[in-house]
Amino acid sequence: MLAIPPRDRLIVALDVPSTADAEAMIGRLGGSVTFYKIGLQLIFAGGIELAKRLAGEGKQVFLDAKLLDIDNTVAGAVDSIARLGVTFLTLHAYPKAMRAAVAARGAAPLKLLGVTVLTSMDEADIAAAGYAGTVGDLVAARAGDARVAGMDGIVASPAEAAAIRQIVGPDMAIVTPGIRPAGSDAGDQKRIATPASAIRAGADYLVVGRPVTGAAEPRAAAEAIVAEIEAALA
Ligand code: C5P
Image (cartoon, rainbow, N blue to C red; front, side):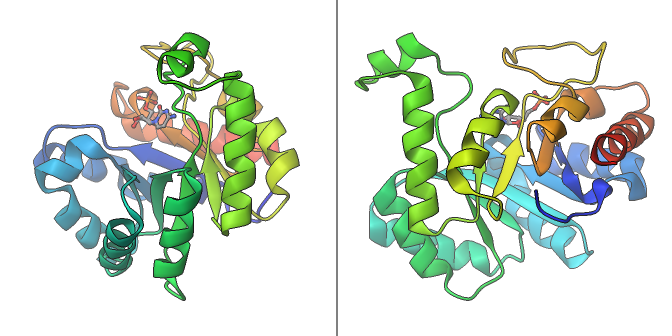
């Protein structure tokens, strides 16, 4: 597990329709949150400018762009994104795309995370997409490919974190969504874990959306998760 302050391990997903909504939530969270995830919904609604602004204000930003394209295009995208000042970028964990991204990132501080198999996909979904074998096999193969390609981390469900840690070793970051504090609504997430159990399974960073942004008191919800992370690490 990487040596990261507990508060910096919480990444709040800004899954909102506009930068105005995002800025309002960031204002409510204040100093309780240091790391934000901007995904596809907000990327196409002004999220890139927001990412630059947040990075300029000293927040860390996870740009969840889930890139996959030909090598030349992936390399060009990574070169552009490395200039934004964001901390994390995702791409689908296909070997050629990962190698192109790692080469294009060069010495920039941008960290590259591989998405192995989307947590919304089950055995039937990967079979329908043309893959043989189980989800577990595919996750393990892609985690190994990410390590060989020189990626910095993996996005995975907490249920996969311990197995992935065995494959990637101690230095790659494991970033887990699907986090639900005890008593909170699962929503559409199926394979969920509490903040404490995800940390104990070997997650370095927890991505949390609705349990924070949908809470009556988002700041208190964030502080409670940070406290739970801190206790699990102790
Ligand atoms: O609201 P909730 O806590 O479920 O949000 C989880 C966030 O993590 C969302 O932004 C979702 O897109 C993202 N994510 C996920 N599962 C993955 C990859 C990303 O839930 N495998």
